[in-house]
Structure formats: C-alpha cells, structure tokens
Length: 179
Image 1: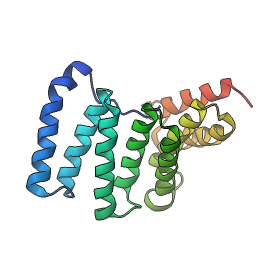
Image 2: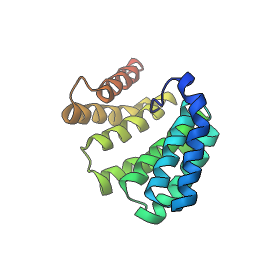
Image 3: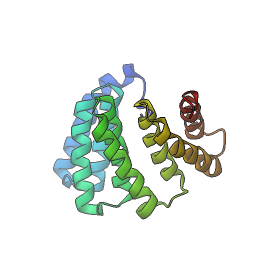
Image 4: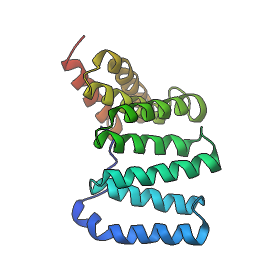
C-alpha cells in the first residue's frame, strides 16, 4: 500500500500542534500558494496520516492540490505527488472509487507530463494503482501495472531499494490469486 511512513506515533502526537502552527504561520506570512507554505502543509498532512487522521489529511491535501494546480498547473510533478497522497488517504477512509480516480490521474500525469513512462515516480504511481486494484480483487487489471512497476523500479532503483521490495511484495500478493 502507498503510505509514507510519517514516524512513530509517540513522536507525531506531540509534534502535531507545532506542525499545524508552522503551516498556519507560513500561510499567513507568505500566502497559502507560496511553495514554503505548501511544503509546511504537506508535512502537517503527512503527520495527520501517521496519526490515522485521514479525513483531516485528505482535506488538507485537497487544499494543497488546489493551490498547486493554480500555481504550477494540473500536470506538474507536485500535483502528481499530492494526487498520490490524497488517493492514499481516500483509500484509508474506504472511498475506493475516488482513490482509484486519483491514482489513475497521478499515473497519467507522471507518464505524460512529468517523468515519462519508465521513470521511478511513474512506476510508484503504477504500483499504487495496482495495489488498490488488487485489494479490490481486480487482479486481472492489477497484474500488468504491478509487473510494469516492479520492472521499472528494478531498473531505476535496484532490487534492494524499499520501493522495489514493496512492488515485489504487491506483485507476489497478486500472483497468489493467479490468472
């Protein structure tokens, strides 16, 4: 699954209010669309993810996404990354249809506008979509995405990289349901 490790819970809980304050100060001082304010918002949203406060993080990801689309355009690398984070939050909240649509859009952006079809970021987007489809029992749709993700991550990052290992595990899980 696509969940960025935000850190141990015992460290996140006390830091959460400081991160919220840092984001609020940055947005007030620089404006909500400023890259530093957006970065602070993303750090705060990741902390909320780590605290399993998915609805709050999803709302914040939506705000960041709207700002990124206004400032960088709908096809930017930043937009693709935020789409993936928002998709993960939606998946965690059980909104699988929205998660799928967001993962598909993130994949399309990385493939065509940002990095290209064989880049590691594109492979991660394919892996995330494949994992979601597999979790829904849609193995036939998941397998090509998971195979592609593993192939491209091996090329880009090597076999020992954690992203490659996660892709390998996702593909192995899908193959258990073999087609």
